[in-house]
Image 1 (cartoon, rainbow, N blue to C red):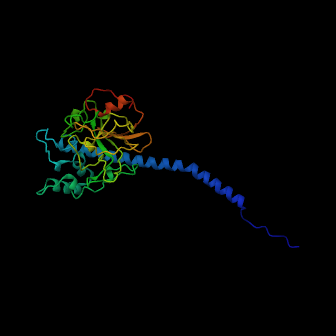
Image 2: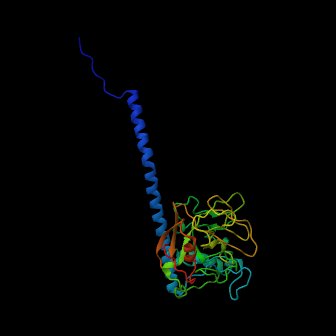
Image 3: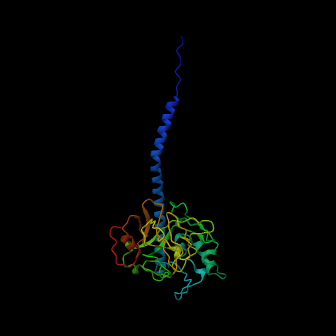
Length: 314
């Protein structure tokens, strides 16, 4: 008799075991892959903020002060400051030449201050998305705000400890309406004072819009253009967290806010999708990752330029 030939291959049970093992290995590997991707995104965010910090320094070298938080005084309370809605822009536009975006800057200034000026949110370049102002971890970054208000980014400048109770007049941070803060004014030290931080961009809902990060529709106090250090990073404090006088903020779980407030009260809190904290550019140009568990007095001290605090342990 001719011996039977052995047939090679897997049995069904063996195949299922192999598939199960591969599935387990993928499940074990996936978190590591996600962590690696987030680490890369956080590094990219850090680099974006370093470039903004460098642009701020270059602006200071040219003008001998940091740019104003915002240019508009829509209530005409600050002598010599434009109160037209056409001036509703701030620090972001004026550092564009220092970020290799001179063409956008020139077009913006031509349309806002030219022979036939238009509102800042009506300029033809308002919808230009500038990657240098986007955190790659935020899936909503680069939103074009409803109402034709234009591009909304993830990085805002710090105005100080608390909300803009005085509608932006001489806040205790570096940026506010018509501010011209110099290095010499930062008495707490540039390594101890926050310059620029992150926010979360909130999606619009139908005809309702969230203005946080909308660079082309600033207010007297900077409103959508500034940050405070009142609440810790990534705060989810209910109802009393972010505020906007006209009510143009949309409350979400990750970025809660109060309804319309009287007296021109504004507040915006630093938040990110980075695990455990936010990136912050300091006035010396360095970028630090600040944990959301930081002691609140330390975080608050970073927001002021001349508070006399010693923020140890930050």
